[in-house]
Length: 349
Ligand code: TRP
Ligand code: SF4
Image (tube, rainbow, N blue to C red; front, side, top):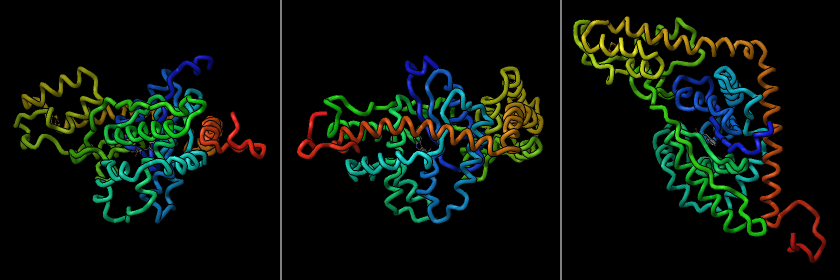
């Protein structure tokens, strides 16, 4: 643990969305698992963020958080090598969010691309709330309270990290510790993976109902592959196809070994193989990745207390770090909790 001091710090979070799918794995989780030794990592379940859209019915939020947790552990996040925690157990995030909200101009929030987009797209919920507008301020607090150096995120989240940098800069401008800035400016770490197509060929996403879950058992995976869309030009078995425009081809490129990818490429273009065969190979590759995760998940499914204990221990560790930052924040704002003698309130620290 000696080297923890010298390692750069990584922080990232996921909303409590329930069971994760392969798109979440390729787009984030797999990347996180590989970062554990290179960085000092903090990964958290953003259950308060889930409330920004699900505030009217909170009955599933906790269960959704637990499903995310189990999938993280299944995928190989290791509590001995990273800190796994849940936002609502570290109330310091809320305190920093409040203080940030004082210095964040409204215009910055109205300009965030996801704000207008989601407000217009999500029709079944009223997102005209204070909390929804302030979502990126909460995210900034999540990141800055750990003084994260890097934030691994997908492209859609980059504007949020940019805003985090702006809030850090503005806070540091108003408040400092004897001239020293309180917050660093964190950098986004773009996840390299391309977008994974779902079974209908569109981006894999829970809202499209086209996902393959990390928890799908083998027969379900095979069934979902069977009905997956292919290159539309390949109508008959004798038509040649093009794996570069086929979502099943994309799955192969992400999950299959080099030999299989070559076999698919040649066989598809020459009509030497059929789609049914090709899909069964893709299913083989998926099962090979999912099976070890599902084996690891089983231990926690049988004894969810084990997973909860991990989350609580991680949250306690996160609170310690968050508290240290909040002490600096309060001191920089001349609002430390310590007693100051009367007349000495502005006193030199
Ligand atoms: N907004 C992120 C998402 O929707 C989740 C999130 C919340 C997050 N807080 C964060 C990501 C802090 C990175 C850092 O995916
Ligand atoms: Fe897609 Fe494979 Fe069929 Fe080619 S053979 S169209 S890559 S499913």
